[in-house]
Image 1 (spheres, rainbow, N blue to C red):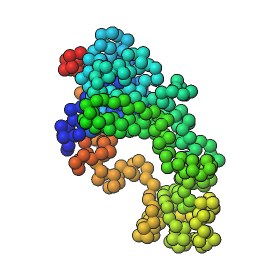
Image 2: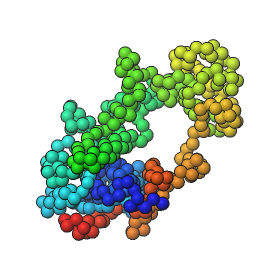
Image 3: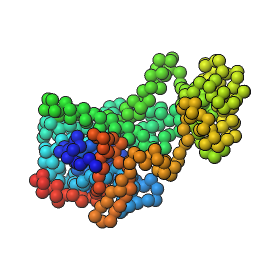
Image 4: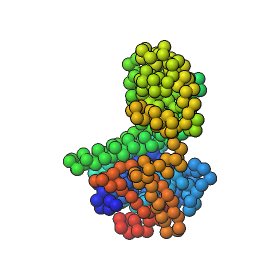
Length: 386
Protein backbone atom coordinates (compact mmCIF):
# COMPACT_ATOMS: atom_id res chain seq x y z
CA UNK A 1 0.00 0.00 0.00
CA UNK A 2 1.26 3.47 -0.87
CA UNK A 3 1.52 5.46 2.35
CA UNK A 4 -0.01 8.92 2.58
CA UNK A 5 3.39 10.59 2.86
CA UNK A 6 4.58 8.96 -0.39
CA UNK A 7 1.76 10.39 -2.50
CA UNK A 8 2.60 13.37 -4.74
CA UNK A 9 0.23 15.86 -3.06
CA UNK A 10 1.08 14.90 0.52
CA UNK A 11 1.36 17.98 2.71
CA UNK A 12 -1.00 20.14 0.62
CA UNK A 13 -4.17 21.48 2.25
CA UNK A 14 -7.30 21.83 0.10
CA UNK A 15 -10.23 23.87 1.39
CA UNK A 16 -13.29 22.58 -0.45
CA UNK A 17 -16.23 24.98 -0.26
CA UNK A 18 -18.15 23.18 -3.01
CA UNK A 19 -21.08 20.82 -2.75
CA UNK A 20 -23.08 18.37 -4.83
CA UNK A 21 -20.76 16.65 -7.34
CA UNK A 22 -18.44 18.70 -9.55
CA UNK A 23 -16.30 20.36 -6.88
CA UNK A 24 -16.31 17.39 -4.49
CA UNK A 25 -15.26 15.13 -7.38
CA UNK A 26 -12.34 17.49 -8.02
CA UNK A 27 -11.24 17.40 -4.37
CA UNK A 28 -11.71 13.61 -4.31
CA UNK A 29 -9.13 13.26 -7.06
CA UNK A 30 -6.73 15.53 -5.16
CA UNK A 31 -7.34 13.60 -1.94
CA UNK A 32 -6.55 10.32 -3.69
CA UNK A 33 -3.23 11.87 -4.71
CA UNK A 34 -2.37 12.64 -1.09
CA UNK A 35 -3.86 16.10 -0.43
CA UNK A 36 -5.62 16.82 2.82
CA UNK A 37 -9.16 17.96 2.03
CA UNK A 38 -11.05 20.08 4.56
CA UNK A 39 -14.67 20.24 3.52
CA UNK A 40 -16.54 23.39 4.54
CA UNK A 41 -20.19 22.65 5.32
CA UNK A 42 -23.20 24.47 6.66
CA UNK A 43 -23.85 23.53 10.30
CA UNK A 44 -27.54 22.97 9.53
CA UNK A 45 -27.60 20.10 7.03
CA UNK A 46 -24.17 20.28 5.45
CA UNK A 47 -23.56 19.50 1.79
CA UNK A 48 -26.91 19.16 -0.01
CA UNK A 49 -25.70 15.93 -1.61
CA UNK A 50 -26.01 14.26 1.81
CA UNK A 51 -29.69 14.00 0.83
CA UNK A 52 -29.17 13.38 -2.90
CA UNK A 53 -30.43 9.81 -3.00
CA UNK A 54 -29.72 7.71 -6.07
CA UNK A 55 -32.09 5.12 -4.62
CA UNK A 56 -33.64 4.58 -1.21
CA UNK A 57 -30.22 3.59 0.16
CA UNK A 58 -28.66 5.69 2.89
CA UNK A 59 -25.81 4.85 5.24
CA UNK A 60 -25.35 6.55 8.59
CA UNK A 61 -27.94 9.17 7.68
CA UNK A 62 -26.28 10.18 4.40
CA UNK A 63 -26.73 9.19 0.77
CA UNK A 64 -24.41 6.66 -0.85
CA UNK A 65 -23.31 9.28 -3.38
CA UNK A 66 -22.17 11.58 -0.57
CA UNK A 67 -20.15 8.74 0.92
CA UNK A 68 -18.65 7.82 -2.45
CA UNK A 69 -17.46 11.30 -3.37
CA UNK A 70 -16.40 12.53 0.08
CA UNK A 71 -14.53 9.56 1.52
CA UNK A 72 -11.57 10.38 3.76
CA UNK A 73 -12.25 14.12 3.77
CA UNK A 74 -12.51 16.20 6.93
CA UNK A 75 -15.56 18.32 7.73
CA UNK A 76 -15.46 21.81 9.25
CA UNK A 77 -18.87 23.37 9.93
CA UNK A 78 -18.86 27.08 9.09
CA UNK A 79 -21.81 29.48 9.16
CA UNK A 80 -20.92 31.88 6.35
CA UNK A 81 -23.38 34.44 7.75
CA UNK A 82 -21.57 34.47 11.08
CA UNK A 83 -18.75 37.02 11.23
CA UNK A 84 -16.64 34.96 13.63
CA UNK A 85 -16.99 31.82 11.50
CA UNK A 86 -16.17 33.77 8.34
CA UNK A 87 -13.08 35.24 9.99
CA UNK A 88 -12.01 31.75 11.05
CA UNK A 89 -12.43 30.51 7.48
CA UNK A 90 -10.25 33.33 6.19
CA UNK A 91 -7.54 32.38 8.67
CA UNK A 92 -7.70 28.82 7.35
CA UNK A 93 -7.46 30.05 3.76
CA UNK A 94 -4.34 32.01 4.68
CA UNK A 95 -2.62 28.71 5.48
CA UNK A 96 -4.11 26.50 2.74
CA UNK A 97 -2.81 25.67 -0.75
CA UNK A 98 -5.98 25.17 -2.77
CA UNK A 99 -9.54 26.43 -2.56
CA UNK A 100 -12.45 25.01 -4.58
CA UNK A 101 -15.88 26.60 -4.91
CA UNK A 102 -18.92 26.02 -7.12
CA UNK A 103 -21.39 28.60 -5.85
CA UNK A 104 -23.69 30.26 -8.37
CA UNK A 105 -22.00 33.26 -10.00
CA UNK A 106 -22.16 36.29 -7.73
CA UNK A 107 -22.54 34.41 -4.44
CA UNK A 108 -18.85 34.04 -3.66
CA UNK A 109 -18.33 37.77 -4.29
CA UNK A 110 -21.08 38.63 -1.82
CA UNK A 111 -19.34 36.46 0.75
CA UNK A 112 -16.10 38.34 0.17
CA UNK A 113 -14.32 35.14 -0.85
CA UNK A 114 -13.80 35.70 -4.57
CA UNK A 115 -10.35 35.12 -6.06
CA UNK A 116 -9.05 38.67 -5.64
CA UNK A 117 -10.14 38.72 -2.00
CA UNK A 118 -8.58 35.34 -1.26
CA UNK A 119 -5.41 36.22 -3.16
CA UNK A 120 -5.02 39.24 -0.90
CA UNK A 121 -5.14 36.84 2.06
CA UNK A 122 -2.88 34.23 0.48
CA UNK A 123 -0.96 35.12 -2.74
CA UNK A 124 0.12 31.47 -3.14
CA UNK A 125 -3.44 30.19 -3.25
CA UNK A 126 -4.52 28.07 -6.21
CA UNK A 127 -8.19 28.98 -6.50
CA UNK A 128 -10.57 26.81 -8.55
CA UNK A 129 -14.04 27.89 -9.56
CA UNK A 130 -16.60 25.62 -11.24
CA UNK A 131 -19.82 27.10 -12.64
CA UNK A 132 -22.65 25.87 -14.82
CA UNK A 133 -22.02 27.98 -17.92
CA UNK A 134 -19.07 30.29 -17.31
CA UNK A 135 -18.89 33.77 -15.81
CA UNK A 136 -20.89 35.74 -18.40
CA UNK A 137 -23.62 35.34 -20.98
CA UNK A 138 -27.38 34.75 -20.96
CA UNK A 139 -27.16 31.43 -19.06
CA UNK A 140 -25.14 32.92 -16.21
CA UNK A 141 -27.95 32.76 -13.65
CA UNK A 142 -29.44 29.49 -14.86
CA UNK A 143 -29.12 26.46 -12.58
CA UNK A 144 -25.80 24.72 -13.22
CA UNK A 145 -27.25 21.23 -12.94
CA UNK A 146 -25.92 18.25 -14.88
CA UNK A 147 -29.03 17.27 -16.86
CA UNK A 148 -29.65 20.89 -17.82
CA UNK A 149 -26.02 21.34 -18.89
CA UNK A 150 -26.25 18.16 -20.97
CA UNK A 151 -29.39 19.56 -22.60
CA UNK A 152 -27.64 22.79 -23.57
CA UNK A 153 -24.41 21.13 -24.70
CA UNK A 154 -25.77 19.12 -27.65
CA UNK A 155 -24.38 15.88 -26.24
CA UNK A 156 -27.80 14.24 -25.93
CA UNK A 157 -28.07 14.02 -29.71
CA UNK A 158 -25.18 11.55 -29.83
CA UNK A 159 -27.00 8.90 -27.79
CA UNK A 160 -29.80 6.60 -28.80
CA UNK A 161 -31.13 5.68 -32.22
CA UNK A 162 -32.15 8.10 -34.97
CA UNK A 163 -35.73 9.19 -34.44
CA UNK A 164 -35.57 8.47 -30.72
CA UNK A 165 -35.13 12.10 -29.67
CA UNK A 166 -32.43 13.35 -27.31
CA UNK A 167 -31.09 10.72 -24.90
CA UNK A 168 -29.21 11.90 -21.79
CA UNK A 169 -26.29 9.96 -20.38
CA UNK A 170 -27.25 7.80 -17.41
CA UNK A 171 -24.50 9.45 -15.36
CA UNK A 172 -23.76 13.00 -14.20
CA UNK A 173 -21.04 13.33 -16.83
CA UNK A 174 -21.00 17.14 -16.81
CA UNK A 175 -20.23 17.21 -13.10
CA UNK A 176 -17.56 14.54 -13.33
CA UNK A 177 -15.87 16.00 -16.40
CA UNK A 178 -15.86 19.53 -14.96
CA UNK A 179 -14.41 18.21 -11.70
CA UNK A 180 -11.69 16.34 -13.58
CA UNK A 181 -10.89 19.42 -15.69
CA UNK A 182 -10.62 21.56 -12.56
CA UNK A 183 -8.29 19.00 -10.98
CA UNK A 184 -6.04 19.11 -14.05
CA UNK A 185 -5.96 22.89 -13.90
CA UNK A 186 -5.16 22.86 -10.18
CA UNK A 187 -2.28 20.44 -10.68
CA UNK A 188 -0.85 22.62 -13.46
CA UNK A 189 -1.21 25.72 -11.28
CA UNK A 190 0.59 23.97 -8.43
CA UNK A 191 3.48 23.21 -10.78
CA UNK A 192 3.57 26.87 -11.81
CA UNK A 193 3.51 27.92 -8.16
CA UNK A 194 6.50 25.72 -7.52
CA UNK A 195 8.39 27.72 -10.15
CA UNK A 196 7.07 31.24 -9.58
CA UNK A 197 5.81 31.13 -6.02
CA UNK A 198 2.50 32.63 -7.18
CA UNK A 199 -0.98 31.21 -7.07
CA UNK A 200 -3.49 31.09 -9.94
CA UNK A 201 -7.18 31.22 -10.72
CA UNK A 202 -8.51 28.07 -12.42
CA UNK A 203 -12.00 28.31 -13.93
CA UNK A 204 -14.18 25.85 -15.79
CA UNK A 205 -17.85 24.98 -16.10
CA UNK A 206 -20.12 22.06 -16.81
CA UNK A 207 -20.82 23.40 -20.29
CA UNK A 208 -17.14 23.91 -21.15
CA UNK A 209 -16.29 20.41 -19.95
CA UNK A 210 -19.13 18.90 -21.99
CA UNK A 211 -18.08 20.81 -25.12
CA UNK A 212 -14.51 19.59 -24.65
CA UNK A 213 -15.83 16.04 -24.16
CA UNK A 214 -17.23 16.28 -27.70
CA UNK A 215 -14.09 17.77 -29.29
CA UNK A 216 -13.66 14.89 -31.73
CA UNK A 217 -17.16 14.90 -33.18
CA UNK A 218 -17.56 18.69 -32.95
CA UNK A 219 -14.39 19.13 -34.99
CA UNK A 220 -15.87 16.87 -37.66
CA UNK A 221 -19.10 18.86 -37.57
CA UNK A 222 -17.34 22.22 -37.81
CA UNK A 223 -15.29 21.11 -40.82
CA UNK A 224 -18.02 19.22 -42.63
CA UNK A 225 -20.36 22.06 -43.54
CA UNK A 226 -21.91 21.96 -40.07
CA UNK A 227 -24.06 19.01 -41.03
CA UNK A 228 -25.73 17.58 -37.94
CA UNK A 229 -24.80 13.97 -37.16
CA UNK A 230 -27.27 11.32 -38.19
CA UNK A 231 -27.48 8.48 -35.71
CA UNK A 232 -28.03 4.97 -36.91
CA UNK A 233 -31.69 4.00 -36.72
CA UNK A 234 -30.74 0.48 -35.64
CA UNK A 235 -28.62 -0.17 -32.55
CA UNK A 236 -26.74 3.12 -32.80
CA UNK A 237 -23.46 3.31 -30.87
CA UNK A 238 -21.66 6.23 -32.55
CA UNK A 239 -23.20 8.83 -34.84
CA UNK A 240 -20.12 9.11 -37.05
CA UNK A 241 -18.98 5.49 -37.32
CA UNK A 242 -20.04 2.99 -39.96
CA UNK A 243 -21.31 -0.55 -39.60
CA UNK A 244 -20.71 -2.88 -37.86
CA UNK A 245 -20.03 -0.55 -34.87
CA UNK A 246 -22.70 -1.42 -32.31
CA UNK A 247 -24.09 -3.89 -29.79
CA UNK A 248 -25.85 -7.07 -30.92
CA UNK A 249 -28.01 -9.59 -29.08
CA UNK A 250 -26.74 -13.16 -29.10
CA UNK A 251 -28.96 -15.99 -27.92
CA UNK A 252 -27.78 -15.58 -24.32
CA UNK A 253 -26.47 -12.03 -23.99
CA UNK A 254 -25.02 -9.08 -25.87
CA UNK A 255 -21.92 -8.69 -28.02
CA UNK A 256 -20.19 -5.38 -28.82
CA UNK A 257 -18.42 -5.17 -32.16
CA UNK A 258 -16.21 -2.16 -32.92
CA UNK A 259 -14.43 -1.05 -36.10
CA UNK A 260 -14.17 -4.10 -38.40
CA UNK A 261 -14.02 -4.37 -42.23
CA UNK A 262 -17.30 -5.75 -43.54
CA UNK A 263 -15.67 -8.36 -45.85
CA UNK A 264 -13.75 -9.93 -42.96
CA UNK A 265 -16.80 -9.97 -40.72
CA UNK A 266 -19.01 -11.33 -43.51
CA UNK A 267 -16.65 -14.26 -43.99
CA UNK A 268 -16.32 -15.05 -40.29
CA UNK A 269 -20.05 -14.79 -39.64
CA UNK A 270 -20.87 -16.52 -42.95
CA UNK A 271 -23.37 -13.87 -44.07
CA UNK A 272 -23.77 -14.18 -47.84
CA UNK A 273 -26.31 -11.35 -47.87
CA UNK A 274 -23.50 -8.87 -47.12
CA UNK A 275 -21.98 -9.48 -50.57
CA UNK A 276 -23.37 -6.26 -52.15
CA UNK A 277 -21.56 -4.19 -49.51
CA UNK A 278 -18.19 -5.94 -49.42
CA UNK A 279 -16.24 -3.73 -51.80
CA UNK A 280 -17.90 -0.37 -51.12
CA UNK A 281 -16.58 1.12 -47.84
CA UNK A 282 -18.75 4.22 -48.30
CA UNK A 283 -21.81 1.98 -48.11
CA UNK A 284 -20.72 0.74 -44.72
CA UNK A 285 -21.83 4.17 -43.46
CA UNK A 286 -24.65 5.13 -45.85
CA UNK A 287 -26.22 1.65 -45.61
CA UNK A 288 -25.24 0.91 -42.03
CA UNK A 289 -28.77 0.16 -40.84
CA UNK A 290 -29.48 -2.70 -43.29
CA UNK A 291 -25.93 -3.99 -42.81
CA UNK A 292 -26.33 -4.01 -39.04
CA UNK A 293 -29.72 -5.67 -39.33
CA UNK A 294 -28.14 -8.55 -41.27
CA UNK A 295 -25.37 -8.88 -38.70
CA UNK A 296 -27.88 -8.76 -35.83
CA UNK A 297 -29.98 -11.56 -37.30
CA UNK A 298 -26.90 -13.77 -37.63
CA UNK A 299 -25.52 -12.99 -34.15
CA UNK A 300 -28.88 -13.90 -32.60
CA UNK A 301 -28.54 -17.48 -33.88
CA UNK A 302 -25.71 -18.51 -31.55
CA UNK A 303 -24.38 -17.97 -28.05
CA UNK A 304 -21.81 -15.41 -26.94
CA UNK A 305 -19.20 -18.07 -26.29
CA UNK A 306 -19.70 -19.53 -29.73
CA UNK A 307 -19.23 -16.17 -31.44
CA UNK A 308 -16.28 -15.14 -29.27
CA UNK A 309 -14.58 -18.43 -30.17
CA UNK A 310 -14.87 -17.41 -33.83
CA UNK A 311 -14.18 -13.68 -33.61
CA UNK A 312 -11.47 -13.28 -30.96
CA UNK A 313 -8.91 -15.63 -32.59
CA UNK A 314 -9.42 -13.65 -35.82
CA UNK A 315 -8.51 -10.42 -33.96
CA UNK A 316 -11.95 -8.92 -34.38
CA UNK A 317 -12.50 -6.02 -31.95
CA UNK A 318 -15.36 -7.40 -29.91
CA UNK A 319 -16.38 -7.92 -26.29
CA UNK A 320 -19.07 -9.51 -24.19
CA UNK A 321 -21.34 -6.82 -22.68
CA UNK A 322 -21.16 -7.21 -18.91
CA UNK A 323 -23.60 -5.99 -16.31
CA UNK A 324 -22.20 -4.73 -13.00
CA UNK A 325 -22.31 -8.11 -11.24
CA UNK A 326 -20.55 -9.79 -14.16
CA UNK A 327 -17.93 -7.04 -14.13
CA UNK A 328 -17.34 -7.36 -10.37
CA UNK A 329 -16.99 -11.15 -10.66
CA UNK A 330 -14.60 -10.99 -13.62
CA UNK A 331 -10.89 -11.66 -13.23
CA UNK A 332 -10.16 -8.65 -15.43
CA UNK A 333 -11.77 -6.38 -12.85
CA UNK A 334 -10.56 -8.16 -9.74
CA UNK A 335 -6.92 -7.96 -10.76
CA UNK A 336 -7.20 -4.15 -10.78
CA UNK A 337 -8.08 -4.11 -7.06
CA UNK A 338 -10.31 -1.06 -7.44
CA UNK A 339 -12.64 -1.58 -4.47
CA UNK A 340 -12.14 -0.67 -0.83
CA UNK A 341 -14.15 -0.62 2.39
CA UNK A 342 -14.02 2.61 4.38
CA UNK A 343 -15.11 2.97 8.00
CA UNK A 344 -16.31 5.60 10.45
CA UNK A 345 -16.40 5.55 14.23
CA UNK A 346 -20.21 5.43 14.38
CA UNK A 347 -20.12 1.96 12.79
CA UNK A 348 -20.61 3.26 9.26
CA UNK A 349 -19.02 0.92 6.75
CA UNK A 350 -19.27 1.40 3.00
CA UNK A 351 -17.71 -0.40 0.07
CA UNK A 352 -16.70 1.98 -2.69
CA UNK A 353 -14.17 2.45 -5.47
CA UNK A 354 -10.51 3.42 -5.24
CA UNK A 355 -8.47 5.93 -7.20
CA UNK A 356 -8.18 5.23 -10.93
CA UNK A 357 -4.47 6.15 -10.73
CA UNK A 358 -1.46 4.10 -9.71
CA UNK A 359 1.47 6.01 -8.27
CA UNK A 360 4.86 4.29 -8.47
CA UNK A 361 3.10 1.04 -9.25
CA UNK A 362 0.62 1.23 -6.38
CA UNK A 363 -2.98 2.36 -6.13
CA UNK A 364 -3.68 4.80 -3.27
CA UNK A 365 -6.27 3.70 -0.72
CA UNK A 366 -7.89 5.19 2.37
CA UNK A 367 -9.60 3.80 5.43
CA UNK A 368 -11.85 6.69 6.51
CA UNK A 369 -15.42 7.08 5.31
CA UNK A 370 -17.06 10.42 4.52
CA UNK A 371 -17.28 12.67 7.59
CA UNK A 372 -20.23 13.66 9.72
CA UNK A 373 -21.10 17.37 9.53
CA UNK A 374 -18.40 19.26 11.41
CA UNK A 375 -16.82 16.03 12.63
CA UNK A 376 -13.28 17.46 12.55
CA UNK A 377 -14.15 21.01 13.56
CA UNK A 378 -12.54 21.01 17.01
CA UNK A 379 -9.22 19.54 15.87
CA UNK A 380 -9.04 21.77 12.76
CA UNK A 381 -9.77 24.92 14.74
CA UNK A 382 -7.10 24.04 17.28
CA UNK A 383 -4.50 23.11 14.65
CA UNK A 384 -4.96 26.22 12.51
CA UNK A 385 -5.74 28.63 15.32
CA UNK A 386 -9.23 29.38 14.10
